[in-house]
Length: 363
Image 1 (cartoon, rainbow, N blue to C red):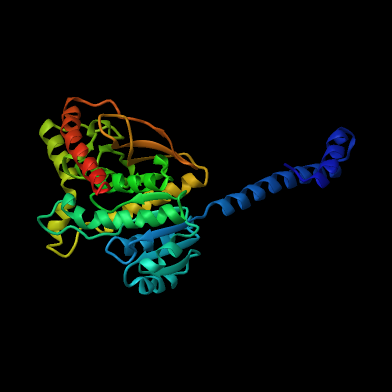
Image 2 (cartoon, one colour):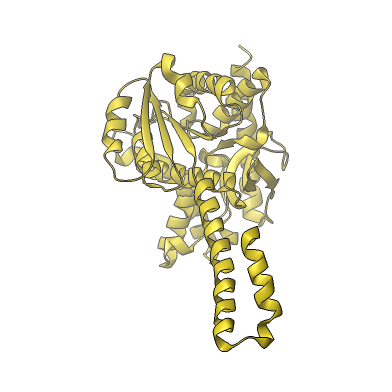
């Protein structure tokens, strides 16, 4: 709206427009331009104020945490980056703080500083935990990472119960239920604010399908539903955009590669780590979507969440994100016969993974 002090001028000039000289008409145009400019500047200032967030990364010194922190520091969406880990956080923060981007970086080290790291955060991303080694599955990480996610979530429940929580720590199929049970016990659980990050499965599917068809991966979109390990990863290749087609054996080979892509990286790194860089990229991408949603944009993302779309308590599907988190679960797309087989194989495994997480919290 135009400020009150300009409205009388605008009204007078508009009413007498037909009787005024050419010079006066120019003045009218100028007043109209002032109104347009005022509205534009007001919107820009409001948009600038809103487009920011304080983001906490728990596990910031690790293999995923460091590149994830780098990507977050680069983003104009982030005004403050709160880095937490049990060791080495000051060095990571000092390094990042030399980058000429606006986000302020603060380091917090050890359990005694965890709650300070979480104060005022809108988005909490958790990559903390031990990485996979050759011969290990994501589920093999459970004994260590389960307690890490539990303890971190307990602090979130106390300090930032309204924050969006994005969980990267594996096994995601089990750690998301663990975090949910912690929040339930604290009386602050909102299923619309707790997310398992499965974006890496989408990123990999886009890449592998694009490679097979000679396309730009940035222009390819492959839905991936289910969970975030092995057979629970269900790529819906039949619903790829733009539409693609493959022989049946090629579809099965691509599906297996997407499901086992993490193992491919673990083997290639020969005992030195797991998929840290691509996971950081995927985690940042999902984190940016959460910030945009907080700023009022309606964003559609695939993620592993509390769900009733099929016969398991948690499931990854497309959801619409808004200021309060999940606004709508878009459910399961129409599946072809092969994709139905994949879903049927995934459900028992997902149930087992969820049960494992919930049982851990009953000990």
